[in-house]
Amino acid sequence: MAGLKIGIVGAGGMASYHYEGFVRAGAEVIAMADTDTGRAKAFGEKRGISRVYPGLAEMLSGSPEIDAVSVITPNKFHRPLAVEALEKGKHVYCEKPPALNAAETGEMAAAAAKAGRMLMFNFNNRARPESQAIMDYIREGRVGVINSAQALWIRRNGIPGFGGWFTTKALSGGGPVIDLPHMLDLALYFMGFPEPDYLLGTVYHDFMDNRNFKGPWGVPDRADGVTDVEAACHAMVTFKTGQCLAVRSSWAEMNEREAASVVFQGTKAGGKVERLFAVDGVDETSIDSSRLFIEEYGNQVDLVIKTEKDESMGRIANASNFIEAIQDGAKPLNTPGEALILMRIIDAIYESASTKKPVKV
Image (spheres, rainbow, N blue to C red):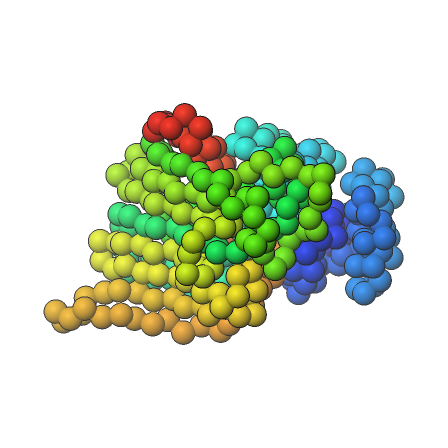
């Protein structure tokens, strides 16, 4: 299939990355939908998109030739919008997290399977040059079995607004546990998505009432809004394969700076993919690196992998992969089954934190 026609639902901050990725891969974005039609119109005018609708149903009715739908909305609406589009025979590209929980993600996966359509998520860090460089070594067997890994995305001042949908559990599903799943996902990707077994986790709510910990991006504060999500998480998950993974994420915690990384220890080599931020939340201030830790000729060697800088952190490349998987038969960078494993772990973090006990994933 050539010249896929795309409709985007949601004209927020991620829309430009989706648009750029789709267009680079040869697709055409022909319509925008947003409850704020003025925002959708402004986005479209800059990019030659003339069709604007208040919602998905109106967009699919007015532009039935759409082949695929991109969902960029508060998390609560991911499942219903994706399922609606899939049931109409459209492919779906959805922002992270997949949904509010694993049950909803399972419904999305089932709808995609029934419709015979592609369902992908914006797990963009898999598409980063640094991550793909590491994966080349993993695929070639240079790393061996990854026994253990540490997934970390921490911020010092990174609460994305107070009282908006990010901090309202009914709309977002939670705080950084569900908002920053990228390093957890990347670690699972490197490890081969083993079947999880048990998890022990805890969350903290410190600083969620302190506006000094607000990040430089997100949504405007709402004086009448809700702030009922966590600020930080620490967890450990074990797998039926014997592997283990430590998880740490935070919007607001007494850290040195914002950092996003996966570190792993394999039977033949270790490795690290990292992005350090000089200013929390500002990609332009970041430093990316990718390294392997190996032994050669009796020496401990650090192998620095040099790759081109990707300011989009893989967001554009991941969106392009969605189009290429549909029209060119490329291997999709992520699957609904992998998304389901990720969400089961996220659910388990919240359950363990609530019960203060280890839980079966």
